[in-house]
Length: 149
Length: 182
Image (cartoon, rainbow over all chains, first blue to last red; front, side, top):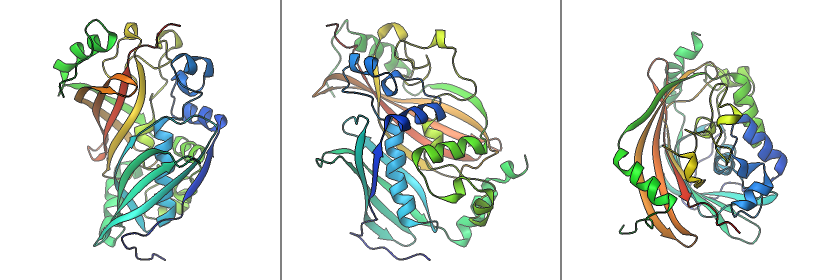
């Protein structure tokens, strides 16, 4: 079910077209009223070239590349990313994750978001660990409060 | 390091007002109970395919108590509960205590996410009662290609009702002076 990974391995890239529909729904579900994401006239007044993708949406897509590329036997424990430039909808984006360290039950991956011209918009790293019996127990302990609601 | 915003600009006002508060706890609050619909909608909106976000049976088979949130759901939600009445939103639409820590609507600063460091300590599942503490960690002026900026980092610690840390997120936003009138 789970394969082993080595430094240099590249997970399957996540290719995604971000649309204004998606921005609207992302604003709605995160209850985010920031106008740069849905009011193009306002966004341009602020100096943007269109409706800006939410930074968290871009991070969520980069993390999908990791979680869907690795599968359920792994869990994300740490993430860090920085946004080098804004992205405007509609946008064709490619997210990649490459293994840069592999030790024990953990991997470190380098995350990259690129637009079709090869410009990097987001870069980051993710730490993941393989789910063992011990961590599976911890999951249940940590959610005991939820189970007892 | 040596850069400071030009005196008299909104960024300089913000920086002077905020710098002495570095290290301060800005807020401690209860966020209510995270429900399965919010998790499912967030997952669907981002296109996530893992059934553990949608299906309690799949989630339990994977070891969770209930459907589990995608990794950055807690980080991404701007307003919890019912949110801010429209009349109280700032001109850019953000709530007064939303995207700009210690923000002042009169300054008309422009804000964007610049990055985040997240420690995902425990999984976040439906039914969890959430609390959030926000601490101001850093306020750093920088001269960038697009002009003077102030980077503001807050530490957002999300816990469950039993005190277990779920996420420890260091979120950085970048602030710029208002757009020039043209």
